[in-house]
Image (cartoon, rainbow, N blue to C red):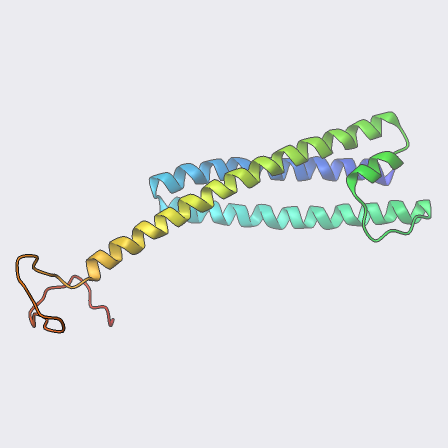
Length: 164
């Protein structure tokens, strides 16, 4: 079996993993909106496993492409998928590589967009948490009592001790 057919198989598995990451990112958005931190932790674990799989597949893909180049007598450090499509032996192989390239590019673009949205949701959540903590730890002030600067109530009530 040609190394390029193996590359197509690897690209299809990469595509499946990226589609899985896309589904997880969509689910993560819902979880972030709900504020379910336990479920978010579970999602992050699954994402981590997906990333490990993607890294393994990328290494396997690079090995197969290097092997193909070596057998063809081509000496290249890096190769783009578009170059590989041009080097393919058969129209079927070219079509399969092009299909994988297109679909993988589309899924990665969708994933980037969704990840940016999730990042914004996380930043908004953190900003809200910081605001809430500041409000809870701020000294209690009586708006109807005039105080000179530096003169504070000895008995002001606070929810949390900021030194802790």
